[in-house]
Length: 233
Length: 233
Image (cartoon, rainbow over all chains, first blue to last red; front, top):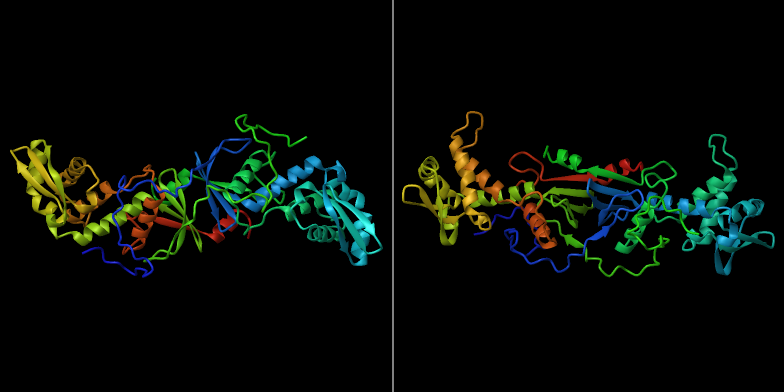
């Protein structure tokens, strides 16, 4: 007679086996651990995977590292944009076919008024008629993004005008919005290469530990914390 | 010019690439996610891996599950031993060759005095001369363990005699010691099949949430907790 199965799921048909170490062959589908060397300011870590399409998990010598993929990518893109800012549209990603963006007249006026500012980020926008802009280039970091949606977000930022409370310049706010809207989102499923690329890029950031909104990009659960949870100490 | 690399590790030679979703092919070494259906009292989960050879990590619909592999295995083995207890050596794992265990005379006396009690757990011990026992069978759960080391631990338990404070019978304490000493330890590296077997066995336990020492076998980090850590809410 075997174990009394309490509330067993009928979908599971195999008998409960005794777990015996060394009794089983190595699992054939076990992935080679994705080891990331220590680079920049992050420790060496072993990537374990993604939780809820939002957080990356990795083991480090100190414990468990949890990375917020959106905050991390924001930080990476923001710093990349800072480094290219001022080089203008020359550093932008030229659109193979310029994308026309028809706009309400006030939005059109805002964009054309701030054309020079946006050019510092890599946007090349050309008025086409009196209500449409042609998007000739976008910042290189936004090459994969929808240029129309990005511009709509930037117009919203421009429409707010100068903020009394925030010391940020309009250029800074446009930089932040561009990075934020271009970054991967919570819910975007990443494969292992993408996870590894993100972690490596983050490690090389000047400030890898917070996004520009002040949120943490990563937290470390120290082993000692895990041990306390499990009353191991 | 590319990124200013701060404290970059010279071992890493590839240039920092821009992470672009959809730009990369699926990673070839990505493992098929190890999905475990909901069974018994545990929710469905996706095993992510092992941290520091001690904790298993899994994603569930509610968040992140962390399992203490030793506490979990203790619980599984303890309940298995409870179910076979009383059936005696008939349910034990017969040793192909009986293992002789030479002992100090007081330990020998203890073992032979409590021979009947130990037989309820599946031990078949036969006095051989006046200082040696032959181990003819051990509890089935201990088939992979060193019978000599297990017996030495049980002798220590027997030597303590009845405890004034603990309500546990001697049989209960021997059961606990057998399960504890047989269970996988912190630091034992498990492959994915072994992790999956442990989680499935735990899900079928009558009480999957604590080991008999009162320590938790698993904790769930709810998504809301992760969101608070990252100031997402």
